[in-house]
Image 1 (cartoon, rainbow, N blue to C red):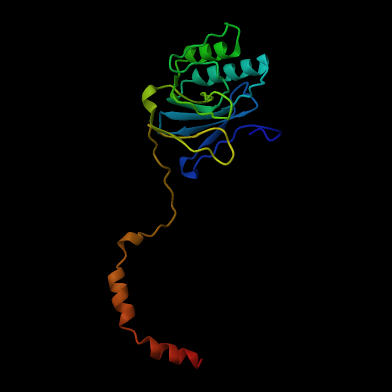
Image 2 (tube, rainbow, N blue to C red; image 1 turned 60 degrees about the horizontal axis):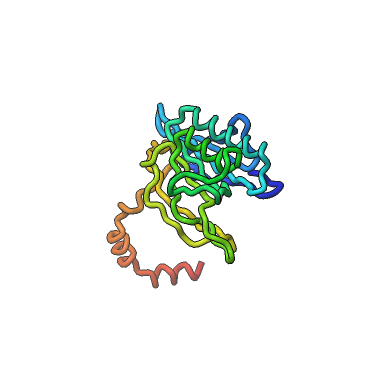
Length: 209
């Protein structure tokens, strides 16, 4: 996470046993982790923020980072974030910008990596501006994302909140923690046992001690 300004943060539940990953040439406003799914398959997850004022060099670093990770032969690939490319029409995955424009370069990067972009409705709304798709969810399989929801912004944000299911699997890590099966308790027997006690007598005796 970039703590000097805007950046990205990625929260992962402890039970997934995620491992932080810093790709070669990692851009400053991104964070990555890997999650071992089984003995042979791994999921890589990334969060990226691209400022609309990014320089050509910063854009190139971000694209190289995505290419590097996508080419690393992870079983499942997921990267998400605010990429700030309103010039891209994601319904047709095209742009009218010139070949040297950042939007065109990014689109070529995504297509070269054979990544699927799942967001098809506007995610950014601001008074006086055209609603557009700035927030993206990219995977290496069209079937990996389901039940995608566009919900209310958090706080004063102009961006919708995105919720979806990622369709891969994971073997949960085994632990030696003692856990009680409360759903198997004999609560009826406990109630009968408590009801059979003369509580007035017991409490009266305790009062004298």
